[in-house]
Length: 513
Image (spheres, rainbow, N blue to C red):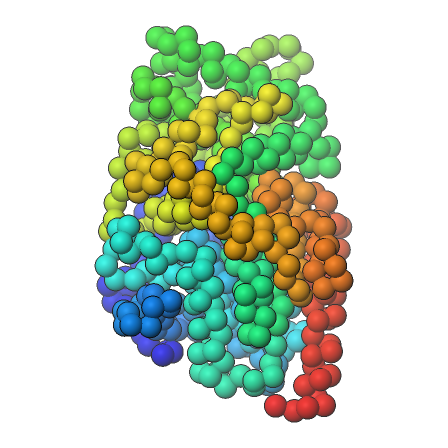
């Protein structure tokens, strides 16, 4: 059933308190949310002025809580956004932007692509929020009994159901092609939607899509390390060496204890003492995420640190040969990020992290950390490690301490997580999913491209690797500062759409509806 009003229990609350909080949270997810909010609030689109768009419409679909059990009559309301400003006719294509592991904003249908491509094709643009995220959270809370209805397979069933329901609601022609778009995890969903429902989804554009699940994601820091040395994005071998020196300095101060550790706490703006080994590991993990985020979101609007700026900080004053210069640069990098996120201090308490993740009430003011941890524990892994000798950062936190979260929060053993990762790759095909009419788009600065498809596997399974581009950068609104390679990448996406849609339009013109 479509068009029902939103549930009053959630209301219009969004992420009002997040940035004033110093509560521990995965830094990369905070950075992603911050960048998305920044990009949506700046430039043409939803802003004011002569180029402002008509605000998109919000709607709700009633979806089965368990689409795989017809005897279960429970349902939930799934939010969607609609931009019909460029929709030329009911025979035009539909661009379906899939949400991922967070709230889906109205900008999903007004900014970046697919919105930028809609005028060319007279397309209807719809954004579909992922179950259990944003305002699409089923009643009943987030306990494990409820979370068993949260998976990529459930999300894909929602896509298929929404595709049919929304087609009826908006009177879309049965011959209109539906194209899925998505970035990061949602990019994987876009590819898998075409793989599993080729009769419903005509084609997909999957940006920065990590289609291979992996328990130990050591490749993440391998790409970060390469990016720190890449002159194309402002890196250098000296920058990578400075990063290694800064982390070695932090570890030395942590091990020294006493006054050295207390000074480190003050200098890094830590929220709490560093007496516990598990908290020291969390701190090192947060610092790794800060450096990783500089590569993952390099040069994006709203990103507090780029590789170029981070390297500038790490190497500042390097001419005096001071061994502490890289450490001072890392301290300044921490200050830059904390200020940008509005956090008063750097939080890393393992006990607080576990306590927060155990909260089963729906967290309207959060970005779905408990839900996403559940998905990593039951489907994907994706635990970033630095255990390879070539990794320039700290060896902690190691994989066992990350897997321990699955046990502490959900009672899931390491063996069950490993088995879930294997099953995910078996079900979807890993980096050889076998889907046709899917374009995989990646940037070589983005650590997640290591788990995506970067080489075409045939004429109908295309791949595009954009030099110097970071995570989902092709999906961001265009900027004058965009690199030539990014501009060419976006042109390639448009050309691929033309290759897919021209024959479909010609066939539609010959055959009618």
